[in-house]
Image 1 (spheres, rainbow, N blue to C red):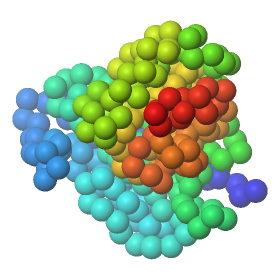
Image 2 (image 1 turned 90 degrees about the vertical axis):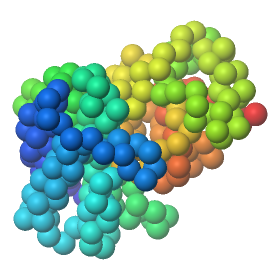
Image 3 (image 1 turned 45 degrees about the horizontal axis):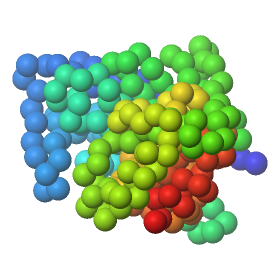
Image 4 (image 1 turned 180 degrees about the vertical axis):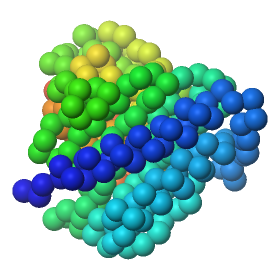
Length: 265
């Protein structure tokens, strides 16, 4: 098995670099916010953080490709870093501290698809960070030296499960709102923690199921490896493992098949 310790250390360096920019600009009175063609906001902090991550990667891993939400794909090859400089930009621009930088490394697997092998989710406004590498487990803490291993829950019945999601609009647009509501009624508790927060709480065992109907690779790659290394499962609505679709269902594994059945109705 490949050794990803060096890549994981680099991921922390990248996250530290991004945090320095995003925290400096968080709640800044002169924060500049634009609207992208897809009608989602982008701030000057999003762009600056991604540019800094790219510059560090260019020096440290010049042969690796980089895909970022704000500036697209640069380079090619079997290794690709995927960057979402601020997951939760709407929260960020309103001063809500629930946002994070998502950074992951993907490699081509036996199936020809790229799968995450390293992932880090850094939420500096919450003073939280989570990370994982293939075969090394999932952790939460402030740094590699100050971390605790995390694991998903052992809840095995939907009626005992906590479900997290982002919003109902996407499910309605995908013509799956009734199915999602049926799933939510079957669960013990539902909360819209949203974005990265749903998946990190799942990886820590505080939430048992998380699902979103509209996502991009940069939204999913880092959370995917963290959930998987914490003992959970991360698929699309089609049940295919990994972050290569346009939607996500994550669970502690025990509830996964029943959740997929509910959402396919």
